[in-house]
Image (cartoon, rainbow, N blue to C red; front, side, top):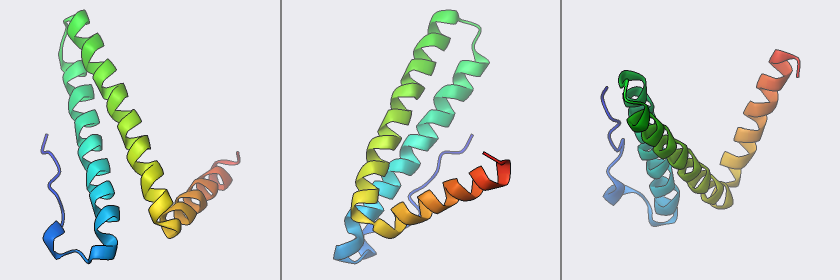
Length: 95
């Protein structure tokens, strides 16, 4: 597994966009962590280790939600597009 790299040089981001980019980078880091912990949980046969890894992955998912909430507060277009995307999938799936 290759972990994601920060896709941009944050030092080159406009001041008014820095917080949004920091939050998106945080989301990326948490998603990488979730993938890592869940993959390691799938690899181990040790029940205790599996339980701990999956619990940590669950915590990382909460962190994604925290970052995403803040991002939507700062970037209303992000919020609108996220909602539109969810509605499109619901429509496609007939839900």
